[in-house]
Length: 325
Image (cartoon, rainbow, N blue to C red):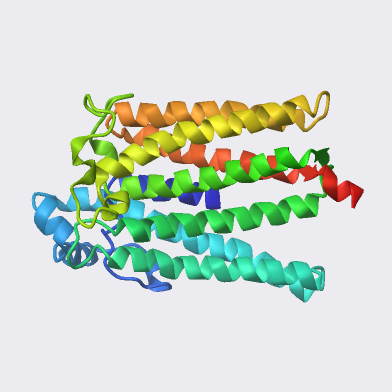
């Protein structure tokens, strides 16, 4: 469900639907407008924000209903995630089928799910008064927090499955940590690129409209602002972080495969290498297509799939030093 939620978030962003609901009502907001008058009120509220006044003044009510649907579905799915996690947790806790340590882990994840709702609204608020879109920083925070929740759920499930683990040289284990760090940075930088709409320019490869580094990459002052707020430099960093991460993952996967001959874990490591290649191909396709919605959504799905395989591969391996100790 969290995986699907991330995809819904990508579609909501790509269709510019995220600001269509201008209030946060955790309970009654689960219902969409049910009458013509209610739709008129929702559209009138949207007409008060800069996104409509600057970018969409010719939007019709029917067009508004389309973008409203994606944001409403995104929020509804978040509520359903909370229920799908909380109700079974309460049931098993009341039946004393969860030990104390696991109980605290699951309660912490539930708290993160609730906090993510506040972060989502915090992000939306940034686009309701001055901006025509949400803050790239808050967008990256929202996506990053979603991935923290996803990671916490996945690692908890893997611990409960008690899968057999392979002992690997410490250097290979360290390579896995490097791969995870680079992948996390690449995903978060992708969120900045999305928030800045940076993917809609420089849609060539490997040069950026004829330049390795475009002249516009360092136009902001102070200079360090360009890293996070200049679309040209943000895209340049992301477009090279992706292949760099791919190479690190491929080297790591090759080492894992070499040290796991005829082991069942080998299939996971092969999938890891294949997904690293596919993710870069999806990123390039998204760029060259001028951010086609389908390709861009698949690119986000690929990022989470690659993250999953990195985490599972890390879980399946353990340093040989720990065996000796």
